[in-house]
Amino acid sequence: MTKAFASQADLIEKKVSFDKLSDNAYAYTAEGDPNTGIIVGDDAVLVVDTQATPVMAGDVIRRIREVTDKPIKFVVLSHYHAVRVLGASAYGAQQVIASEDTYKLIVERGEQDKASEIGRFPRLFNAVESVPPGMTWPTITFTGKMTLWLGKLEVQLLQLGRGHTKGDTVAWLPQQKILFSGDLVEFDATPYAGDAYFEDWPRTLDNIAALEPVALVPGRGAALRTPEMVRGGLAGTRSFVSDLYASVKAGAAAGKELRAIYKEAHAALKPKYGHWVIFDHCMPFDVTRALDEATQYPDPRIWTAERDRQMWKALEG
Ligand SMILES: [Zn+2]
Image (cartoon, rainbow, N blue to C red; front, side):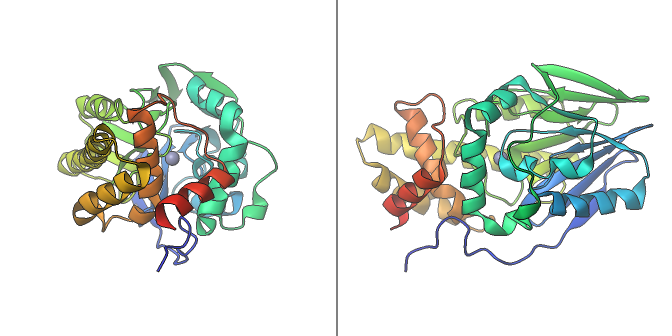
């Protein structure tokens, strides 16, 4: 039996959790669906990643209003993926902040990514008609590091290296050692690496580990609430990325074709990671990008709805 394209057969709604990590930090998670981080300062609220549509963001806002009535002034985009950014309009924030690299990726490939992601995973775009036309544009961009003071609460936005995308940004509360990682770190969820930099990703995880977070909100999966859980999340993400890239590089070095490399990588990784959510969704995209990086494409090629289908047919057809 052939697998349905990407996650078109994934229709089961997930249960949302809204966890308090400190007086200033909350995690909106949903059993492996994309997470949103919430930072409550003295005078304003900052949201890290928005959910996929304004209607879905409305549920985040409802949870925020259960713990604070402070205005939601800032939206931070950890990276450019549609499932993270297209809910932004719901918050009515004064500023939408992203790295300069993320801004450039939205210019370069935002429209194609939007069409591609909605086609891959319709359930994740609940009430997609509520998404305004066009792109979600950052109103402030930065390079490397930016600090916001929400009253006495310091919030650092940091680019610690490339990994999940070229523009990856984490939000860091240095006074409390709490980190919001975006998709650089996943927990019990398969890292999507279709736009990734495999060579860089482990080093970027080292840079996160060097901050010694005591709690971490991953891109997908439950909030990591102890240093031990944080280390586990970092180690799991690192081993998946490293194992996949090693398998693909070995196949490439042996002169094998993409389809054969994919079948081998899938078989090699399934025993260890097959129980993570979206494993079967991610693997074809991840292996395709890994082979690109191992051979002739230092930067990820743009995924379009059409390229998605061709690739899926070639590997799973
Ligand atoms: Zn992503």
